Image 1 (cartoon, one colour):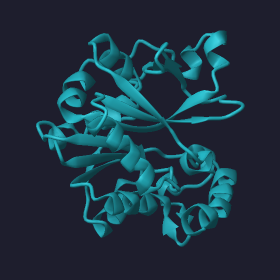
Image 2 (tube, rainbow, N blue to C red):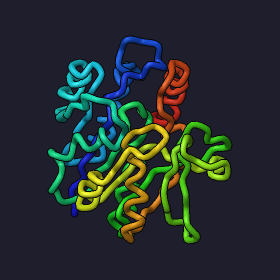
Image 3 (cartoon, rainbow, N blue to C red):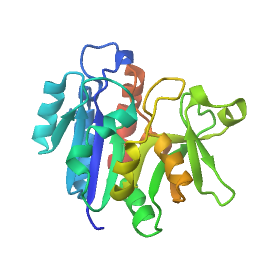
Image 4 (cartoon, one colour):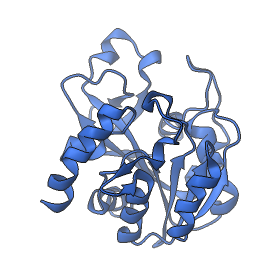
Length: 247
């Protein structure tokens, strides 16, 4: 189980950016955000990367060609679980692990991704979730942990109870799964939630219910995992880039 693969979610339009340009094409340090994500995967040494494209697919695919990675099209925006499922025909049946990450988290480092790999390879977990802790986790899915600090599930904010919304540990949207478990389970996702979408996060609860163990790794530097959803976020990422990656 030595090979690691990756699925990068890059299909979104990013309307909050107030721009006609696809969100992952906005630049940071003279390169599109997506390019930074793909570079981190190259540094990690993944065997194959699949990028899920949608909005402005041709322009996003051009970035992927520059990095020699293939793309799959998500023609309808039906949620993160549906997006990942588009990569199933490419990666299903491949022995190893699959990292899942977002194309709009440009400060994520290869060494952080390596920590997720190690949690699955060395600790024998079925999956590992990259988490972060903050004073106010509003807007994020909350991490539900058990008595032994194992992850029991992830609840999206719109589906969370008042007590769950007080949890300060949140899901960053970055994961590592055993392939043999990921692809069969992703077919079991449904849309029984507040958004009416296929949530990738529901895979965690499915794993736990089937008796599998899920680990959580807390990112040391929360800035590294902050997604870019607005122009203000992009300005913040540009400011943090030098310190995180070249400091």
